[in-house]
Length: 289
Image (cartoon, rainbow, N blue to C red; front, side, top):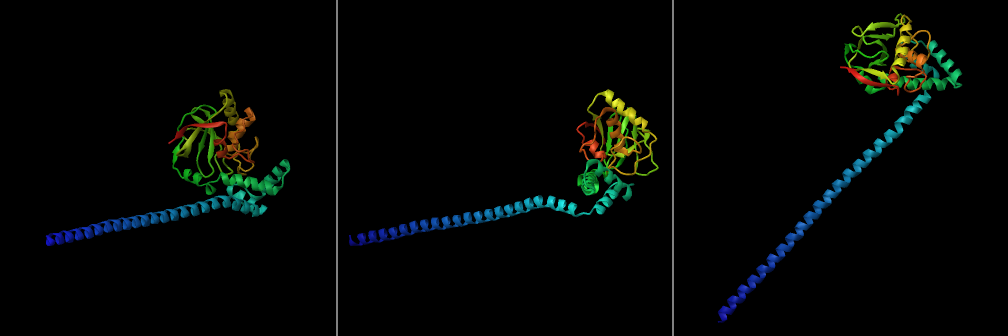
């Protein structure tokens, strides 16, 4: 009987110890797991915060660059001397000369009652905007291949060919265009068939938002310019009806002088081919692929 009690006590004691050990082990396991989980969560938070700080830093740098660069460009433009501005305008208007550009600026300054420095800066800003060397999108498009125009269109419609400064001409009828090819001084305004005209891939055919009667009048006026010498003074100050013509000047003058429609899209001192393309009066409805 004593032996049985002893055995029971022994078993009970061992069982209790085993139970306590098991409970302790479970508790300890849960504690360790909890600590590991907390550690992992903490690590995740630290990684997340680090990424967040990096993103914030990058955003601040980009914002600073976007904010500062325009002012740097303005400051650079303001620091450029009048002579340097004129020289750059000549470079961006192939065929022009310093004395010719200088005289054009002085005439414009007198007419608008502004300083020659201000006129030069305004003209230079427009010239840069329309030149492929300052505009990556223009440079990409101007690198396309050469093809014949070949596309029929309505009288008075305009074609725009992407190139370093762009090129435009006007349709005299469905299969004939009038253009001022340049920039050589001996070139003249000419009338050619659409299969004789070489343009860039991606050339656009544009319609002018006006009556067909007005489009006819503009095309007929352009026809009177055939034989005029090419205007080598460039695009910077080409808004005049008479005398020599470059490509955008021809199209602009044909419409402005007969219908009053100003195809200059930005209202600057000169009318560039791209000004006609982005005019509120024109829209593209066909492409030369």
